[in-house]
Image (cartoon, rainbow, N blue to C red; front, side):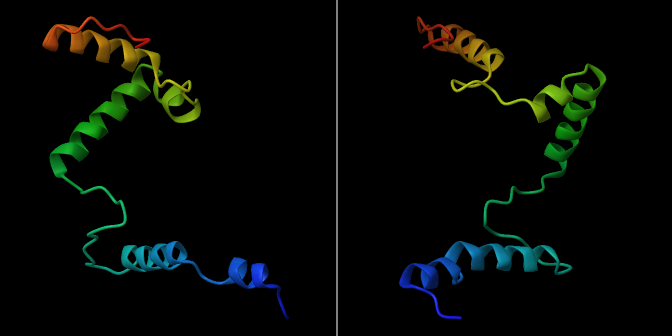
Length: 99
């Protein structure tokens, strides 16, 4: 089939497509060490922390909200309040969540 110039560009593999294929191949190769592509490191202590955090969120009913609801455009209001409090306490900044 013959494509236009745009069609040729649109249908060929892009760099990101090739990268994603390489990453996928690496995930499926036993013993492969993933050194890039945005995958987080698997740190046992952090895995334990996240496991406990997710378990707590399931127990107190917050897991569904975290997984199924988007935050507002400014971000999660609870995080903004906690961050403003920390900046006031730690650095003495006169800052509110809306800042």
